[in-house]
Image (cartoon, rainbow, N blue to C red):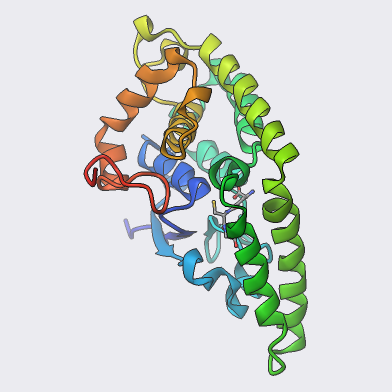
Length: 265
Ligand SMILES: N[C@@H](CCC(=O)N[C@@H](CS)C(=O)NCC(=O)O)C(=O)O
């Protein structure tokens, strides 16, 4: 049988949303059937060098100018440009990520996890990072030679940066995201019994929520917010970090740009 046409995942290695999707793919297990099988190639977008602001990316891949994005030339009529939507697409093809007996709970928990503004938690102590994004977009808008279509796309992107990033690092917003994180992780801890094995509900394999909570917890540790994580969840994180899937993705790096990983410390 000819190998299926690959999907393409646009990602950045320091993007928590990209890492969540990449690790979910790493743990995908067996597809529902042959048609559901996903071969995924990956293309890095250097968000630190503003590649996400390039005209082709903004106008053809993701108007929000963000990663991750999943595309496929025939199976996806348009790119999927949000990590939660990409996760749902992957889990619809790989059932062990979303076991039937926990389906409703996992879907609800994924929604709550993805409603948290990770930027507020990761960059709350560096508001200049948000401002720098705004300045980068403004600078491009000011270039006289750009096309009208590109200018419109940049104006839309500017609004996204202001709403999600600049407004995400105000004191009130950071406090709100800290509270959301505490409530969410306490709920996760209620579903977790380390004595029943390393994964939630004593499952034998990590589901999509195990995978993505582990990335989130690792990020909280990497940005000095480990105190928000209930002690009970330390086992889940340690177990996940010890897996081949994690090691292969992170290669000894941390989850966060500029923070040394375990192999670099
Ligand atoms: N809601 C989106 C958020 C994506 C997002 O904010 N991505 C960040 C990296 S984690 C990004 O692309 N940053 C570059 C930018 O905003 O210009 C998702 O879940 O995919």
